[in-house]
Image (cartoon, rainbow, N blue to C red; front, side, top):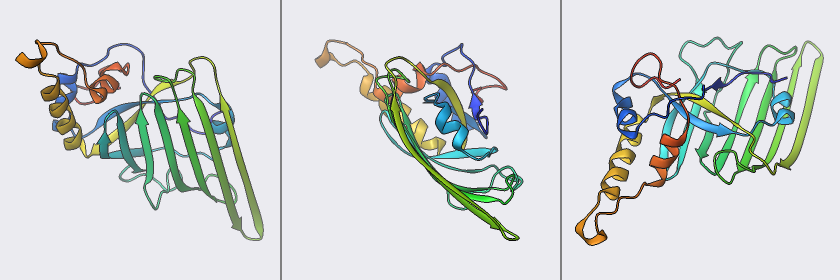
Amino acid sequence: MRSFAPLKLALGLSLSLSTLALADDATTTTMPYYQPDWEEAWSAMPSYTNVEGSIVSIHSPDITYAMSCTSGAESSTCSIKKPWTMIAGPETFKQTGTYTAFDWTPAVTVTYDWDCKMTSYSESPSCSFSLSYTGSESGMETSSSIETSTSWDYTTGSPYGLPVTAGLDKLSDAVASAEAEATPTASDGGAMGIRPVEAFITAAPVVLAAGVGALF
């Protein structure tokens, strides 16, 4: 069983790019990403929850996020001293970080790394995963580590959502740039293409809830 539950997005409406461009007017926007359903990796991770992110950079079609605990989160649910890094795109999922899980006895400090390549949105992914943890308290000690890799010849993965509270201006800038570059001109005969970052954002199935800018 998974030791935590990231925000899973319901299948349904794919928001248009123009709708998503309004997201910087909201306090929080939930950004979609695809992560392979790999039970061996999920079950190895001590629990955490209450994580949010900020957009660090966009190198189309990949988006880099810094992930940290939500404001006011109890340390028993989330304890991250240095922000994690996540890179997500239609062919990429990478996530690495360190955190402390206080619901274990003794509490453990965990360092982990996911690195996945996909054909497109979790189609035929190939992944590596490593994790180690240590903890000690009142003479009790625990430690463990895992390093493994696998691949699938079929689609395995789900759309998840990361609540993003900062860096949304970078998203708006990328959207504006993508739309400008896709605008037809006389020299190209009026043909309009779709830019990679636009394709990634609009292809992720998300359902609108709680108004514009809250993508659940």
